[in-house]
Image 1: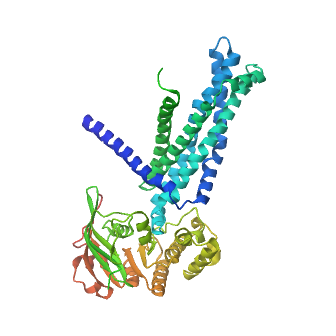
Image 2 (image 1 turned 120 degrees about the vertical axis):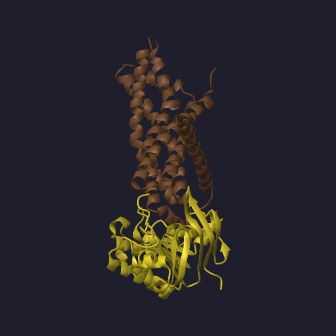
Amino acid sequence: MNPLALIGRFFIALFGEIGSIFIFASKAVPAVITPPIYLRLIVQQMMRIGYFSLPVVGLTAFFTGGALALQIFIGSDIGAQSLVPQIVVLGITRELGPVMAGLMVAGRVSAAIAAELGTMRVTEQIDALVTLSTNPFKYLVAPRLIAAVLTMPILVAIADIIGVMGGWVVGVYSLDFNSAIYLKNTVNGLETGDVTSGLYKAAVFGFIIALMGCFHGYNSKGGAQGVGAATTNAVVSAAILILAANYVMTAMFFGGGR
Amino acid sequence: MTPKIEAKGVFKRFGAKVVLDGLDLTVMPGESMVIIGGSGTGKSVTIKSVLGLVTPDKGSIKVDGVEVTRLGGSAREKVNRKFGMLFQSAALFDSLKVWENVAFALIQGRGLGRTEAKDIALAKLAKVGLGPEVGELSPSELSGGMQKRVGLARAIAAEPEIIFFDEPTTGLDPIMADVINDLIVTTVKDMGVTTLSITHDMASARKIADKIAMLYKGKIIWSGRKEDIDKSGNPYVDQFIHGRAEGPIKMEVGR
């Protein structure tokens, strides 16, 4: 095959996909803000997306914080006592907390949403919703979007705390730092903006996670294989979009370049 | 009298494949219309076009004299309140109990309270021969025939004016298929509703139809009263109702 045609086909498919995502989002967002609001479903999804993600997010944050402390200690000659806690807390709250939590929840939740909606699509359950005069965007998509945007910041706040604790555990028990000084340096190194910027990121990541899960699930076709592809695509696209959005938001909050 | 459903010159294609090629169909109030035709002749797309699940490229579809092809949002939901549909695979919501499935349109669409809706749901389940204990089960615990019955109960729960049946007997053994056919006939007669069904099962078509229309390559090539189908004089219809491999209809084997 002509390699140029191949490249062209790839970009047409790519831009087509981007366009479809925007069209999907332009239907999903109005569904979020107009009645009917299904409170029962939102609470149910908050449990699934938020509460049941706690163990995986907590463990990830703990080990990330610990490894970060160790790396900084190895890399610093003098002043490790104050350097380690400050860099750990900044690294966790600004970047690693939201990104690691976002990626882990993308793996858990985007996949689950895509598989569920994909199965509903191929078994005609989404069509059935329409025939029962229920808008699938309001009944299926909106509750998941709302739940993800609300719970992700809470998850990340918890991840921040556990991540800092991971650094503290390594600092105090492995690197023989003084516990009180470690905590004092942590607080000294921290400003409100460090935490809130991470929480804003988390809300955006939550939107991406639910949107990608819903988009790929809603549009899946072709039986079990189609649902499988939808699940994979949901996780991969959510992860890439999270990393890209993270860069853009970091540049926005903390200024790009010098 | 205004037809309940009137489709004129409906045209739909997916990519290069033309599925509906100028479909004309009229269903009068209280009539049971059955569309027969082979796989891939556009039967499902016809129903989905009326329901608004598929938007035709060209042509007009009127429900009670009102054009519905370009409706969206709440206007579409309002029209769809007139409809009930039994899906081929029943399409029950597996995250909900059986009674919640049956009561779905009542709770979500009509805003009924759960206790009131449950009473109606159990009454509808009784109507299709299922006891109240079935209402507490999950759809995955039911056999195919029972799922179809629940699907029927869900389709009639909100007292629709038009009910669509998509291959109501496919995948059932002959006896269960006949039970479902009987249920369709009795429930429909009870309610005096209009129905539009699609099937390739001639036994089922003969049982539930007042009128039969044959769809071939996206067009209605014959329609008339079911008593007349054996003397249609149309070679396509003859081949189909007798299930012969030889004839004017060539199966596209391996596409």
